Image (tube, rainbow, N blue to C red; front, side, top):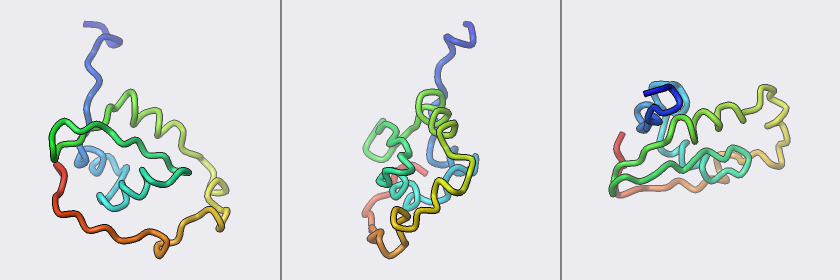
Length: 95
């Protein structure tokens, strides 16, 4: 099997956490809802199992990230912690 024919690794939340991409489900959900960040939603494989495609979702998202802080300096567009309602979830997806 050639490199281009290899299966695309499917990353769990813990994989994203170990890679230093995200630290909490709350942050992940905020990033998914933030139009400036546009974190991929991934795919549900079961009721509590979500996976992200490394090649099709995570790698392109990482490449799209700005390298300069000025991309986030518009304070009017930057949500403040109080702008994000705290969400309580009755279940946790696979961590």
